[in-house]
Amino acid sequence: MAPPTAIATEEELEQVSQTLLDLKVPLEARFRALFVLRNIGGSRAISSLAAALLEPTQTSALLKHEVAYALGQMQDREAIPYLSHVLSKTEEDKMVRHEAAEALGAIACPTAIPVLQKYLHDSAPEVAQTCEVSLDRNLHCLYRLYFPKIHTLAFVVCLLCFV
Image (cartoon, rainbow, N blue to C red; front, side):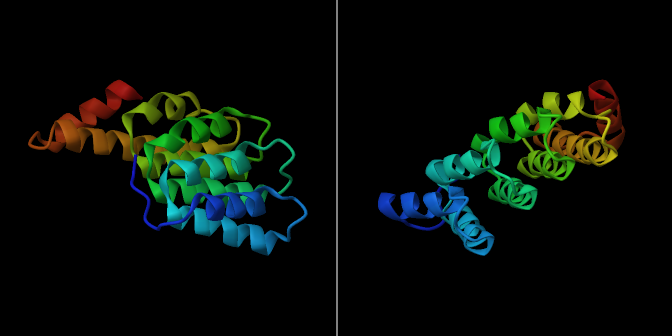
């Protein structure tokens, strides 16, 4: 888990989280709350962002897209289950699913590989292509972690085994 990048009290976190989730608050203010949470970081911020991403009554695909983007920027593995869940919801807006796949690539953790593989051939080309790019990024990071001195050809063989 990445450490928080900004200090906030529990009350401040709660207030910002409520702003993000309140459908009556103007979208502009909710976007500001989203980026405040991203900048704060940590488990509590990720939980609040995930609540906005997974909220079934959330009507703004644009906001959900930006939440997924922010979770990817945070590069915290704690976000992987939430992003994986959104990617697996085929009824979700394809722009949101695309960004969830992109975020999983940005986090670059081996635990994201199975869900990215599962949607490599998604019916939405935007989702399938993003899964391909993100899977490549994840496998490349995995390769560099475990095989830093092996020739690039070995990486290609490793890629073929996963795809």
